[in-house]
Length: 242
Image (cartoon, rainbow, N blue to C red; front, side, top):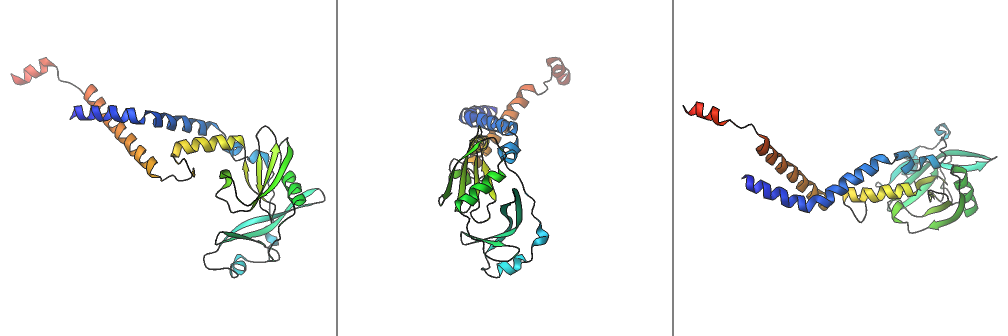
């Protein structure tokens, strides 16, 4: 039996050595990177929304949509008198399309023009770079691929290679992506072994390797027990036999 466990342990070690190393390395890197900087929270200005201004309820908005529509809270930003202000807004997702409503008036929000988007992006940006480019994307890159299109991509010339993704109707920053986030995302991909979408934590490859790593650990424990288990001395054995 111990010969079987030794063979199993050796073969599993040969198969798993690379992935186990990647698990430890990726876990170490992700724990070192501050999550606030990964999310880019230090680069954006957060504006509080005065929800007491809302006069339209979510139920009133959802009545205009189907039963499968979902609603989330958001904010509509504006730049007035050199000050960034936010009023309450609703985002309704229905059949892969997003509708934006003012929570004050209940009206659909029109898409903002590029000069307004640039102004709002700069107002929310707290870095030290200049605005390089603004582009309305109908097809989103992988780093924000789970969000609904379209979104405005705002590129800044800073050491973080920062990109802000703004809602085209509210002007709110939906996501911030930096080089720190891209490194984190790369090591997250290695950690969960989802090399395509980088989001499926239950993929068969991860489950298979995790189960194999568990067998590797258990077989190692059996071999350690055999090696270090207490042994009766010959003198004690002779005494028992007498």
